[in-house]
Length: 179
Length: 429
Image 1 (spheres, chains in turn orange, cyan):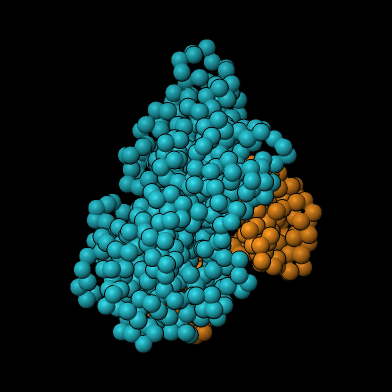
Image 2 (image 1 turned 60 degrees about the vertical axis):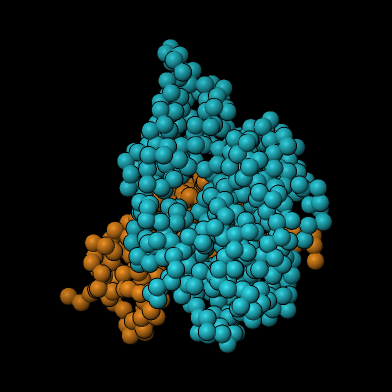
């Protein structure tokens, strides 16, 4: 049976560029896993095997890395993963309220995926947007800050139609009143 | 120290439009420090650059507050084999969100600082380790690096000299521990982020067994300032013992949260009340976490006259950390708060050392029991005993970082903890 996941020539060229940054191939495990997750949406055991073969690094090592780092998905996730921060500044600024609102709205609990496969929700640790709490991150990419119920409604509606959020710049307050 | 804060002009992230573009950065004295060094290499030998930075006493902005130049001086003499600089942009300490300002608004000042550091330590390759959650910021920095290559500030024979250095970004994937320098190196080598036993220190045996220095992003962004204006000028900003500009990340219950840049040693109450607009909703201040989740919380009555520098905060009973200040109002439930911090450390413990792997779990479980209203007085003793069995008994400082907020909160907010432990008849605590 043919492997479900493969890298084509273009992928292999990109991977070669990634490995060239390091003195050995093992060091490229994280970037190549990122590359694989971007392509396949996750790094499940089949993807781990592919990365192992491509880099010539033991599968057990790859599995160890995937299971250590929170952002690598060990199994397929929803099309959109909502990582809601509930840590420290977000905790004291309504992070849990937002998480619970999203859970209620989607009818799932943190750690679950909607039956239509559109959304997964996770309660996550500090994402480094403490001054813009409460906030969430969409599928390891854009931050959505200063969450309100309205903003969540809009975001979920947009994501259903395939519209990803824009990058939100948070200028330093000194800049705003300055020049 | 903070008398003239209102007239302070930002140096790390100045208010200049499109400063992230290399042409704008160049127009505003960008890469001048590097040019100055490479044009006067007899004056600015690598050793002299190290000395100048050492004299300026840039205290590491990643949390430890160690003199950056002194750290550089630990690198051994070159032996012809590769040497590395790893720039720490992991920025995972809860309450910290400052380095991303540099990536977004002034990446070239950091890049210039890193190149100067590489020159001073005779380093061949620079890796910039950035947390995976910052993907949009990694891309912004990568754009800036590409520009710097195009203009000849990076790569072979920089600005026509015989000095060459490469710079690569490396994205983490969600692990707080990778901000610890030896864990960061493991992660760069493509492994699970298990901290290494020290010694050997990174300067002796770091990345791929070769001499390596690890510096925080903000620390390196200070370097061009020192090299352009001199150590004496730099020492004139803020307190002598902890000089220079600082990015203060203020979050929590304030009216105007955000990252602000002022001199080190700012008065804490000024930062809360004037800079950040005071406590939200006209409420009273209850406590402050001064420099990220691992720095012990200070009660409002402990903040009088305390300034944001290592010495003042140490005397007050806490630490400067990353200057990620979390402001907490009178309605904050300290038990809930500390439980959530413990949950974080339990989640982030790498599991290598037993006192940390088991201890963080027990702290979390015991605090959960108390916050859910099932606490007994003896649980407070148990918490303190767990802290004692964690502190200083592990390879890295994560166990200490997990224990301190618990220990000091029980000490400083004892009544609140006791109130939730009223079920028991064994009042032994």
